[in-house]
Image: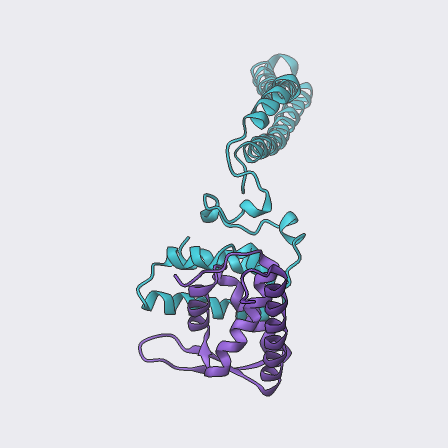
Length: 112
Length: 199
């Protein structure tokens, strides 16, 4: 386990969005991969990632397409759209400035 | 919970959404199960990791109120913990049991017993009507020679009427008995549900 985050649910949901978008900037993934990868880092009911992916789809952050796999069910892949990329950049900036601010507030943990 | 049980429960939890959306969502979770299984996980593990179908449905925009009024969880899920977040009683509740025993002893049973007593007395009445009809018919036939044809036809006709009336009465009582059994069953089921909890 790599420094698993276990914090309150609302906060986690926001972070979750950023993490999923960030994954999708690298390549297209199918649902199970996303869930599996995210849950390696964040403790969350895995079932709640699919609603998020569906919302991304509705809001146009991602596109989906089905692809047959060898010896398995067809898999629904998620591909980041230009709009999704924009959102990702915004969220990422928000996140970093948030983390910076918290670090400054908490002090101690930052090199002075 | 296994794959089928989980998907069925999820489907019920989502049932306030449009049908095509439900199918779409269920498709995603079915894929998740299938991929998980092909990677060597058990259906139970995957269900566990996915978490509560109720919570998932809420994420899809199903109103939390929906779960207060709808029976969404199938029998096979009863002994699982998915409904705990909903504050449903799942364990055996002693206070509820004591309360219901009190109510039943004080009010329920006396009423039920007297209703059944009335029912039985109706059956006896119907039986008596039929028997008296038969006996009148028998006697009038037996006395045919002494009373003459006219009175005989009168008595015999009356007897047939009585038998018919009794038959109708019995039919009605059988129907009434079924209703009574159904009512009694519902009462005890309701009590059981409030004591043991769940659906």
